Image 1 (cartoon, helix red, strand yellow):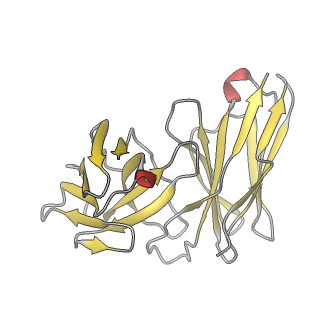
Image 2 (cartoon, one colour):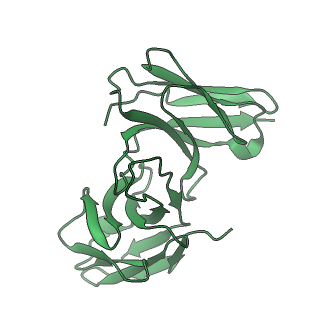
Length: 112
Length: 116
C-alpha cells in the first residue's frame, strides 16, 4: 500500500468546515483513497472512499487532486461529535477483502 | 441496522492464561478482520478470513490463532498471555463478494483485554 502523510493535529470551530489533507504521492493506479475515523476508544468508522473522482456522501466530501497524489476530506459543518482521529488509507481492492493499514492519522478537535 | 457484535466487551486475565474473543459479523458479510490497538497506539491488523478461509495475515503473534466458522462468526484465541497483550481488540466485517470491488469495513465496539 502507498504511504500516506497527514498532519498530526488540527482544530476547527463548531459549525465551520473542517478540511483534512492527506498526501499519498506514491499511490498506484489501482489504489483507492479511504477515510476512516475513530472517536475515542470506539471502533473505527468508515467515512468515504474514492478512486479519482470527487465523492460526496451524507458524512463528508472527498476531493482528490487530478494527479491523485493528495486528497482532502471535508466535513462541511463540523460538530463537537466530529472530534476524532481521522485516518487516510490508500489501498487496492482484492477479491477476498483487504486489510487496513492505519497510519498515524490526524487528531481533529472541534471547539465550541 | 445490525452491527458487528463482539464479546465479551471487557476481559481480565492473568499472565500465562488463555483468552477467547468472539466476533459476529454483520449478516451476509463474508469477510472478518481482527485488529489490535495498544494504549495510545493506532489499530494494527492481525488476521482476516474470507469465506471461512484465512485470507491475509498481519502482525499476529504465534501465540494467537483465529478461525471463522460456518455461520461466519470468528474467534480469536490467545494463549500464554503477556502483559503486552493488554489492548483493545477490534473485529470488523465487510462484504468482499469476490469481485474486487469496494468493501468498506464495519467495526465492532471492541473487546478490552487487560492482562495482569
